[in-house]
Image 1 (cartoon, rainbow, N blue to C red):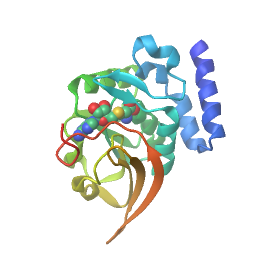
Image 2: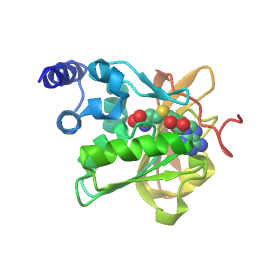
Image 3: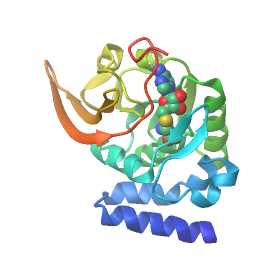
Image 4: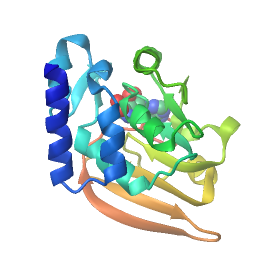
Amino acid sequence: MELERLQEQMIKGLKRLGVKREVLEAMKKVPRHLFVPEDRKYEAYVDHPLPIGDGQTISAPHMVAMMCDLLEIKKGDKILEIGAGSGYHAAVMAELVGEAGMVYTVERFRKLADFASDNIRRAGYRNVKILVGDGSLGLPDFAPYDRINVTCAAPDIPPPLLEQLKVGGRMVIPIGKFLQELHVIEKREDTIHREIKGGVVFVPLVGEYGFRE
Ligand code: SAH
């Protein structure tokens, strides 16, 4: 009951920030407290990032909302996410794509992939698949994707991700090391269109087309 009230407050705060209705509806349905460590569940609906183990964090709710807004997700979309973490962002996107859509999310730490899988199962999502691997290589098996959501900061756009994005598709990706900015990429027939949305803070993308450990 208390958690429900806290969630309502979180949604009100996001609404004031101008988050779109579809994204607010999706975030209303996902029990964020199931995606944070048990002893942090009363902090789940506060608008800041939280530690989830292995030095990684679940992004703040406003960042999840903003990235979903920028992706312009539609029912039935096939989405690739890099950095499953807690699985929360994937769950919000699973609500947005609906039962006809699918979210594939890649995580480099097996322990976190297991954490995300447990959380996704407890929350009851069937349209999310979690895989362990280096997401800077994308996930060729299920390509091409309508949308790609990168939740860790890359040195630049990993070429495999651009390759695995559909023409007409969109990708949101934080780029930079100390100074990071959120880039929105639209893949067109022969070009890419890029818009930069301002400063952000993410853990690094570590991998072949990411930063080195
Ligand atoms: N989307 C997550 C937040 C993720 S934090 C959520 O909703 O909770 C970023 C994640 O990216 C971390 O879990 C980190 O381990 C992962 N990561 C970093 N480099 C990666 C890579 N090359 N491939 C896959 N995951 C990676």
